[in-house]
Length: 432
Image 1 (cartoon, helix red, strand yellow):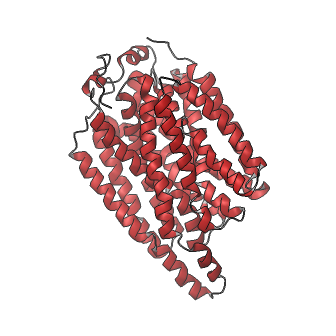
Image 2 (cartoon, rainbow, N blue to C red):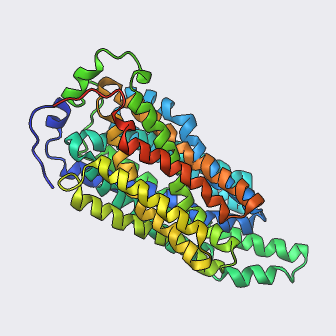
Image 3 (cartoon, rainbow, N blue to C red):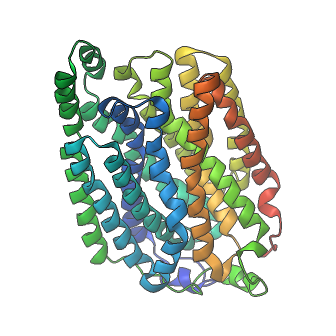
């Protein structure tokens, strides 16, 4: 995968052989894939341990993803001083602080502490993603950026698929029998059992904390090239940026932000909400705890197809177009079927979603030149869709039914379809 690109860009010339950087960044994507997709297991786990309603349990995704909206632009300011490499180190260390908070949270069985830990972890991820996503885009030709992002997606979703299996086996082991047993206990005995359940999370999160700190140290001493000057971006796109004074002069970037916001919302519904949806429609949690893994396996298949087909067979905008059409079809399938078949359609949304993140990023960043860090920060704010859209789904579900709440996905995919067909061209200067 070693590529020597033409000297069209100072940034690319600096990292012409990007095999080693891709491996290092791939490890980072695996880390935040694992930490992110364990939320699907945390939602039903904390619902039981902290005695929450479904709507209350969905604060897990809100606390985690809303931190992106609050930290994205501060992250870009930090990166101006640290550069990408030190920014990645900082992100990992902040994440380790967040995962460490899970220990007192588990010891006190305090939901607010858990949410605080998730929020701080999200802040670290915001810094890490603000650095790493544009880094992958810069590492080679913009035309094949979606392919590189797909490779990162495999690292991300591969680790993410393992997260529910590993953490579910620890935190939700024999959980249906555990819940049934709680019904026959008095308040004091019930509290003892719930305290024991909450304690299951301590050792895994100590391990995660140690891994994050070790990775930060490894980044510090790695050979990762540090691209820390905004002018070290694509030479062609830099020339386009000279007559534009701010981000709002790039309509396709703003529409890309809206598209990414909606995309992350539907991705979180497909991945994190699927377990609690299964429980809500009567599927045993010992079975439902694996559903997130099925969604992520479907995404992995989509990423592998992306690597094989983009850009030689499919352009990144065409792959986004196809994915949005499939998203509409699978959403309607989830609405108009029941039980395990409905679950299967939700899991298949993972396949439909696979080309979206890899395509939206390069389509939105192409041509922003010296604004790349600020533009990246804007897109990172879009990740807050993972906080807002699932909450809306939960509110709708409580009033009209959780299966019917999937109608929320339809307008989201229609907007993504528009961006693929036309939105990514609005205000973009054609260059060769």
